Length: 214
Image (tube, rainbow, N blue to C red; front, side, top):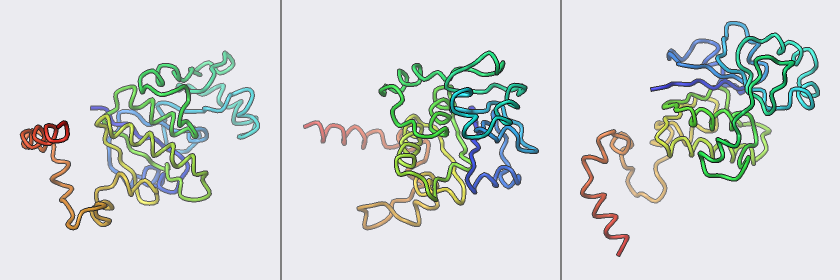
């Protein structure tokens, strides 16, 4: 069991920084300036913009220079010796693992973080500040939803918090309130996610497979 917290800049990150959520994590990952937040210690900092050719123009030279003294791993698109703890993001390994073309659906840093967490064997991922509720490009929302789905499809539990648009696809409470499309009566989600559900209903599953294969 490996629980990873991913910190981004959306409003729901306060659930982590204000100690509202009482969960013990195996690792805490943040992006960019999260490395400078008081009271927050990251196990990995993700700076996917090129440290030489892009990041100074987005975040300023002061932050980029400060990262040269950062002691934790900096996961980035290209490692440079000037940043001693920088590590190349394993993009080719990730794409081979998921079976997708190089870089597909990688539209923001949280996408890279989600993919790597699954690749490294996370069983539970908590998204703090990965909200994408305001002036976010549609392709960014779609891409992050894609990686959430990829994680869930591999049995990884994804947790989001109030303020995130992804509450609608990860929070059972929201799902129960909204119901399930097409059903006149709402199936009880507690039953559907019961770990023993598939074992208890193995015969029904076999019957279904047999029916659709005819």
